[in-house]
Image (tube, rainbow, N blue to C red; front, top):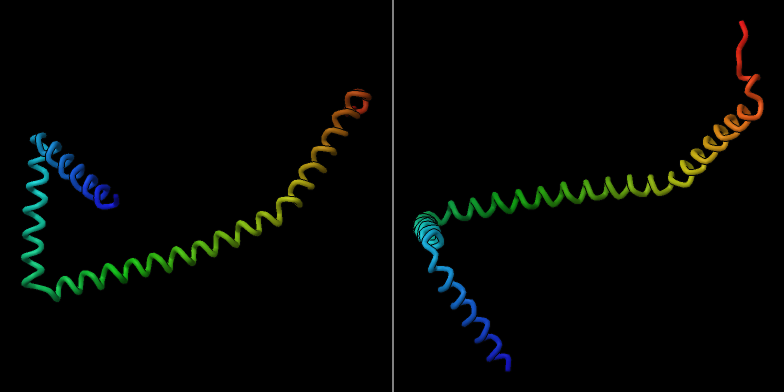
Length: 119
């Protein structure tokens, strides 16, 4: 059964590729990319040290990006934890401030003459 599945997938891929080649722009784009790929393969076949240098350069860039990501991840996780610890304190301060303002507004509603300043 798995042979039929793999065969069916392969035939479907071939059929899909063949149908997509009916479009002129797809054919032209594919031809350009294949020609460019052939040129690159020939170049690196004659200059394997450049391929090695390019792979090493790319590898070092990826490693650098990974280190930066890991450092940033640690920094952001630390800040996230700090925010989680501060959230209950901030909530309490906001509620206290709300109570003070609400009490002041209610007091002014009850005694509006006390809020008038006479010079």
